[in-house]
Image 1 (cartoon, rainbow, N blue to C red):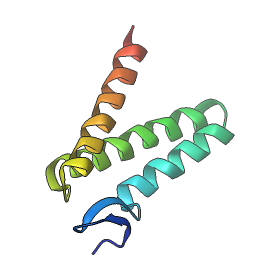
Image 2: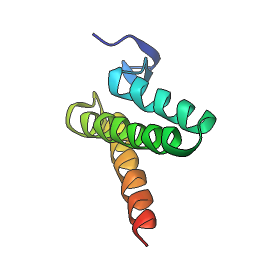
Image 3: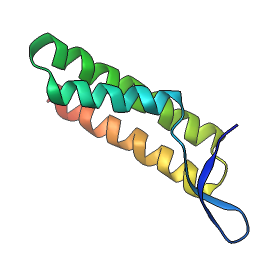
Amino acid sequence: MTRDLRVAPGGFVLAQWPNPPLWVALAGALVARLGQGRVHDVATAVFFMGLTVWAYLEVTEGVNWFRRALGVAGLAYVLVRMVGAID
């Protein structure tokens, strides 16, 4: 069960507490920011994995169009960063 933070009129959910994949992504981002070398690389990978799972879940199970659009934006961000890393 999610605990909604912001609900617009009509019960439209704009934000909610982060789910586990988003917590993993946030932790990875924090460790990557503070770490160096191999720790930074692994934490960056954890960030992208967590963000990808979160975005996929938002696209497939989002409670409304806004949440699904956030998922699409998250997947697009990951894709752009991965393509940029390949070049």
